[in-house]
Image (cartoon, rainbow, N blue to C red):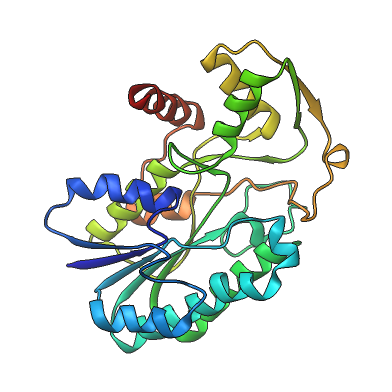
Length: 286
């Protein structure tokens, strides 16, 4: 089976690359932005026509959430129109598609874990582009699984965990938002879940949610990072209003994972367990 992964140098793509070694019977094509530039629709289709994958993992995206507010056309091209082209190709060529979406398709005004059929209402350009991609996939009628995830981190790329470790090492005191609630996602766990879905016999198209188990704020996340790394830094909890950004963030992003667990038998680790695993890998590679 031939599996093409877009955005292969991103956090998720990099983790899939590591885990792919455990699946020698699959032929993986890792398409980074040089091989498959998602802002060039002709090139996207050209690569697909050339490689003819049976499964496409659509992990590439424009993820600079604040910058997205001023680069609307580029964000829409990469996050929406390229995905629409991939979905149409998948439908035409009888390929399966797994596309990664985001909790940012919601407005964050809920108080209960978010189910897949919860009404969407993005409050920033990034979230809107990802919602448009979801709708384009549905319209294409491709045999597609959409996985919404949240707060992604890993040993690869830039992310909250790495930023916190750096800031806590450089400063005596930092402030972290305490009124945005959700659960982080260790990209290695999500990558494994995707490969488990591909390997299973239970493929069922539709939208699913995935993040690690637990319910925390960014402040809680930072405090646990500090504890595990034994860093001497004061962390002050602050409300969102004290940290204005160009893009608004949803205040509530806790995803309900019942559907993905029931359909595919996915076992989802607790966020603290996965954070320890990631930090241990970081230590081993340093």
